[in-house]
Image (cartoon, rainbow, N blue to C red; front, side, top):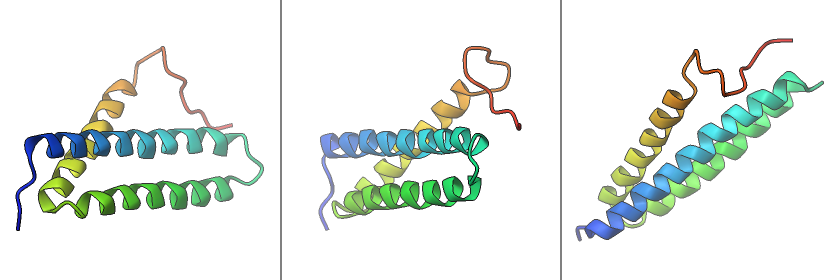
Length: 101
């Protein structure tokens, strides 16, 4: 079993961050579209399937380099979630807020 280099781990962490931004940004986008749609369930399930497929493909690609790379990718994914949650915290007036119709 080989150990990945630091550069490889950094690339996988950055890739995980990008996956996290796509996943959670896609969730936000899907929820925004659901509110104005005549078929919100289609947006919900379609968005879920697409986001899961992209995230799982990215994580599988990281796994091909070993468990260390997968862990780095997951760390980047979680860091992206934490960053987006901090940006979207309640009380921020510069971000659109989701309101039920």
